Image 1 (cartoon, helix red, strand yellow):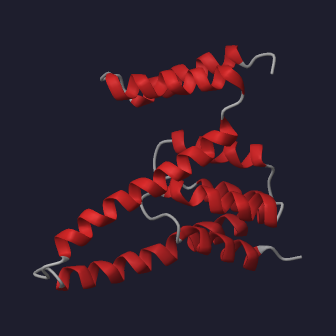
Image 2 (tube, one colour):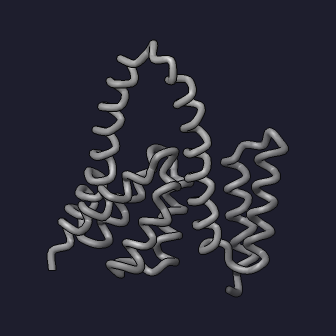
Length: 174
């Protein structure tokens, strides 16, 4: 069965949840890609997503997902489907927002959108953490990494690399 139309639908739909960031779409993408279409196991999806987060440059983990489902055409389809709807919406909203420059409710709307974005990102992070953290070692590494990033000036890149090295030894027998 040709998966291209389904890939387009899934990633176009998931992209609509990226308000505030890519992590906001993870719960819905998990439901669709793991539970509904059975394209991936939950562990595969978490690993591909996590690698996409730490890789430099734009987060195009959707290309990896699409490629695993339907080859190079699947990768291209997933990227276009994931970027096109939200790009068009952002372009349209940006034009309207510019025209409403003197609108008296503009500031209130902007202040109200920020907590929504933060809530969506937090929900996505909690959802991902629920599936990504394995055992007490994973929780300890995650808490330590979060504490280091929030309380020191240590580069998050260094924290991620150190966490990966510690994880190699902590999960060696797992």
